[in-house]
Amino acid sequence: MNPNKALWEKGDFTEIAAFMRQSGEELVKSLGITTPMRILDVGCGDGTTALPLARLGAEVVGVDIAKNLVDAGNKRAAEAGLYRLKFQEGDACNLEGISDHSFDLTLSVFGAMFAPKPFDVAKEMVRVTRPGGRIVMGNWIPNDPTLVAQILKISSNYTPPPPEGFVSPVTWGIESNVIERFGAAGVPAKNISFARDTFTFNFLGTPAGFVDAFRKYYGPTMNAFEAAEKKGQADELQKELEELFNSQNKSQDATSIPATFLRVTVAVQK
Ligand SMILES: C[S@@+](CC[C@H](N)C(=O)[O-])C[C@H]1O[C@@H](n2cnc3c(N)ncnc32)[C@H](O)[C@@H]1O
Image 1 (cartoon, rainbow, N blue to C red):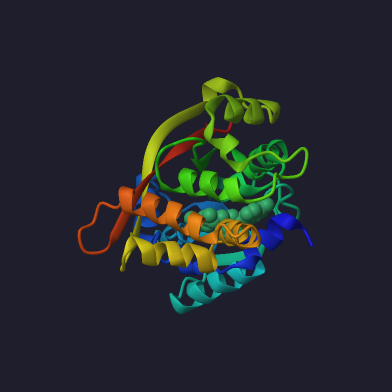
Image 2 (cartoon, helix red, strand yellow):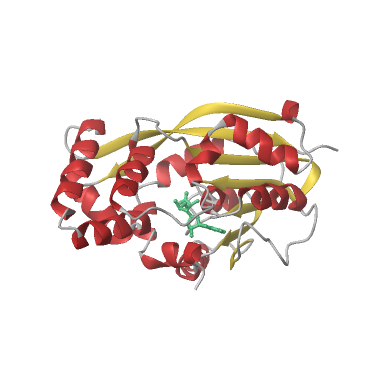
């Protein structure tokens, strides 16, 4: 089994995505979509951004490597009566079956960054976007002090070293890497812009309760706990994560944690 697919099918990311909906909607609003468009959402999960895009009247295709998330997305789309929104299985490294230049906007919010071959990902996103169209990515930033970068960093301290040649997903949060990857796909640096943006996780419970959700449902954290348990370090990992979540929580009576990400916008040349 493809380890990238196995990682994301392992847990149930819908249980985390449920606390990301508000920021997903805000991100979609900030894209300034006015005319009906064809939009591809890569690494779409169960539709945190794909559903709000479809509600704007766009024709949306969501592609994700995890079958359980594709199924969950199609269920949410049907329940919402969004018949111009389809989710399908696919790999950001090779968007086979998707025609060249077929989308006005290719979006990937914390999705394509997890695919193992970043140069192929950039090439594919450029290939499927029409000349004059745009690519927008949201990428977690390495060593950023906020939530998700820290979860990934803490988790990696407990898991065995990755195989040789593994490229860390958070390298997509470094501007020079983004320029190099899209440059290799034929996009000049002047067509790429960057901004720091914020995504807020809102959980109706305590920060410790939110850690438990990550422990039960979020593939990278599940793997970290499995490895930590083998070494008798699970309590230590739990404590580290609880300290992190508590220190970042901005809510008095529930959990609200803002996380910083790098927003990348690529203008695909006419
Ligand atoms: C952190 S989740 C984000 C999901 C969604 N964009 C959201 O904001 O709720 C990462 C997503 O990327 C997907 N993913 C990981 N590697 C992928 C790949 N190679 N191709 C397509 N999707 C991938 C995962 O299955 C998962 O749904």
